[in-house]
Amino acid sequence: MANWSVILNIAKTHLLTKIKQTSTAALGVTFGIGAYITLVCFMTGLNSMLDDLILNQTPHIHVYNEIEPSKKQPISLYDNVEGSFNVVHSIKPKLSQKKIHNALPIIKYLEENPNVRGALPQIKTQIFYIAGSIELGGNLTGINAIDEANLFNMGDYIVEGSAEDLQNTDNGILLGIGIAEKMSLKVGDRVQLSPINGGIFPLKIVGFYQSGIADLDAIQSFTNIKTVQRILGKANNYITDINVKLYDIEQAIPMSKKIEQQFNLTAMDIKTANAQFETGTTIRNLITYAVSITLLIVAGFGIYNILNMLIYEKMNDIAILKATGFSGKDVQLIFMSQAMIIGFVGGILGLLIGYGLASLIDTIPFQTEALPTVETYPINMNPLFFVIGFSFAMLSTFLAGYLPSKKAKKIDPVNIIRGQ
Image (cartoon, rainbow, N blue to C red; front, top):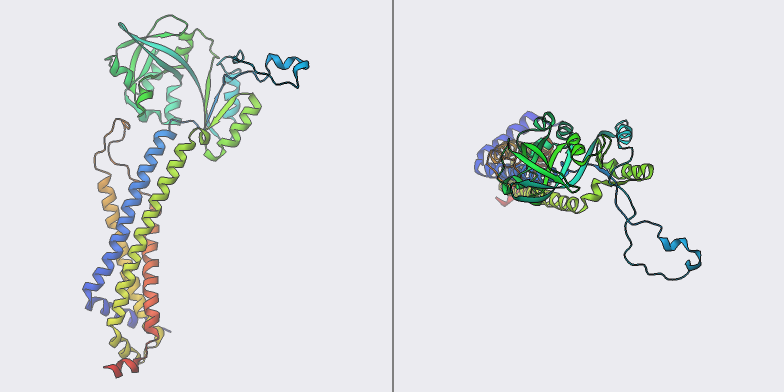
């Protein structure tokens, strides 16, 4: 049975007598782990922010009525031309409406599904913004503002005013920041809207919306569902879109197919809608983890080299230890203990430095028009990163200590003493 108090005492003496080498080895671990923590917290925070920019505003399933050509064309009614080759020009879409038939019962049905977090109605329409002699084409979306803020984080994109202001103001409008700048409008002003079928409706500006996508902010505005129904002269059950948010995003594809079959509507899932963006996210994450792992491996090799040199310099000590009755296993444990002490101290310091640097980055101002509500660089302080960093510090120092100490275990003290 190893005498741990003696082994640890000898390990401590070795470390303290060569304090420069010990410090260098510990600093190798410290800066490796510190750099890993800083990089991975910053990169994953940045990736998360970019994902949220798109995914926060995108429903998991978007249900709507697609305008499409008739599947059965008039020529298919004639049996006598069935086997021949036909060329038909200018096929028109079938007569269909944007309105979702039985939208309110469908929403109620979806909300009863245990996988569904919420199903929100919307009305999308094209309009003209009129201010004096200026006329601008754009889109108006009727929403339940507070529900949108709760489910789709809409509040993050309102730079002036709030979702509550829109919900509580009859004939209020949340104007896209691009339109507001073009027309020199401010909160409290009135803007006149004209739908495609004619008429002019004055609405009061209760706030500004900025999605971070300039082309969208130059045309998009929001108002209450009832206000849009009134502008379009439609009934209370007129709904053009249903946005569904799920508890588990992985359910989006199967559920969208089920909705299409059940209700004969188009249901676009988030994976299909953002396929290119998702690919970019995967590649960014791969780069982040590849660089992080490289940092940790480089730190591990540094520790190995220093411990290897330490053992070669301690040959005389090893010979004396063995000559005085210490077994090869005891000698191995002494050098393993040194490695683990270096790993532990270096790992703890690395975590502290990483946390400090990540916290510092989190306070650096980061202002961009694309992300109005982000004020500082994003940092993702996931405890898992700290666990991985410390575990790697211990693992790499264990391996770095094990290989040279295995060599020390086999050293013959007679050869060393004779060589002296």
